[in-house]
Image (cartoon, rainbow, N blue to C red):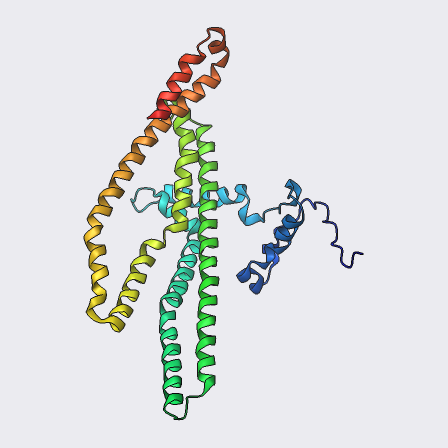
Amino acid sequence: MTFWKSKSPPPPKPNTLLPESNANILSRLTFWWAESLMSLGYKRPLEKDDLYVLNDARIAKNVVGNFEKSWEKEYTRKDGKSPSLLRALNNTFGLKFWISGIYRFISDMLLVTSPLILQLILKFAQKSWDNQKNLEEAPKSSIGFWFATILFVMQMTSTVFMNLYFYNSMETGFLIRTALITAIYRKAMMLSGKARNIFTTGKITNLMSTDTTRIDFFCGFFHMAWAAPLQLCVTLGLLIRNLGPSALSGFAIMIIMSPFQRKVMRSLANTRTKAAKITDERVKLTQEVLQGIRVIKYYAWEESFLDALNKLRDK
């Protein structure tokens, strides 16, 4: 006998607006607006019509329109300064990007100061044990409950702000990538014959795929550049406060290893630069193969071009 039977999942509802657009503050903080899509994906495989329709602020046409307005202002500057893509991107997407940095700062400060509350809890427990052992009056238990509540609130708030940081910064990176891909594509359609010899199809494809992806990734982790040293300083100060000068031993090891890390990172950057040039050549050759596939098949040159592509991949 069946006492409980789950309802069959609803059919797809096409053209449903993104719930985040009308979500309240609590739903935005906890990402509860995505619960319906996650529940539906648990019940059955998602389909294309299950995906939400983006709001106007995230539509590619509007995103690239706002970016082109900022770039036009930057390109027609009258103060003698050269146009800057970075300034144009900052004018278009900077507000959400820097707000995400504030979220990261709040999260990190709550995270690194939580051990102070934990220290108070340990002192309270030790004092209660000592007083009970010596038959003295123990401190009020409500003090310990308050410390535990404060620690819980700090950890939860830190988690919420960290998630908001990643969400906003990665969304900014995605919007920047959308604007740049669309702008590069529109510009590529208007290149002259002479410019096409410089900006080949492989180079343009590499700009639209690899380079814009790096900018997207950069936006998601840029704030770690200042957050990591800040965390290090606060944590090191707390360690010195509790352990004394002996806490500097681990910091000294990190300083000693920093030249080696710098050398490794420089080597990786040089390798990435060389790989980008090879990627341009590979994409260019692939494009030439696709454009001349009929001639290649007529003359049975498949093996020759395949060997050339494999050599570029091996590099």
